[in-house]
Amino acid sequence: AYREYQSALRGFNQRLAVLRQCLGMQSALSTYAARHTWATMAYHCEIHPGIISEAMGHSSITVTETYLKPFSNRKIDEANQRVISFVRSGACTV
Image (cartoon, rainbow, N blue to C red; front, side, top):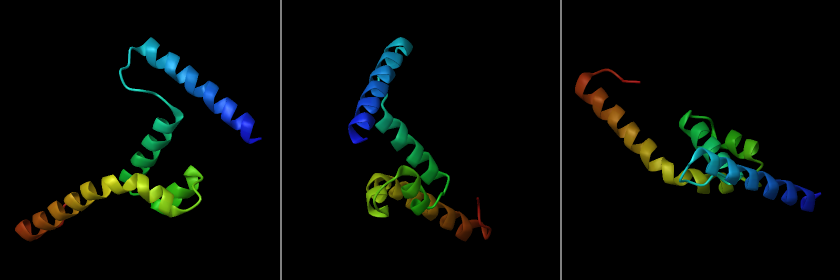
């Protein structure tokens, strides 16, 4: 079953490469990029990392967190800005 999966995945990625060329895209298209994009978007939609991990089929949430870690600084910056806005105006911004 694993060999069949790898073969299908390789074929799908090859078709994505052809699609990328047809569209004149510079960046690569792959199932990896699509999965990473989905996980990133889910994280920014504030979906719990445990749910993202399960949806991705990862063996543990630790695996998922390695992908999401680079984005946590952005979330911290956003949280800090919200707190600063609250302190300055006396009201929480969404």
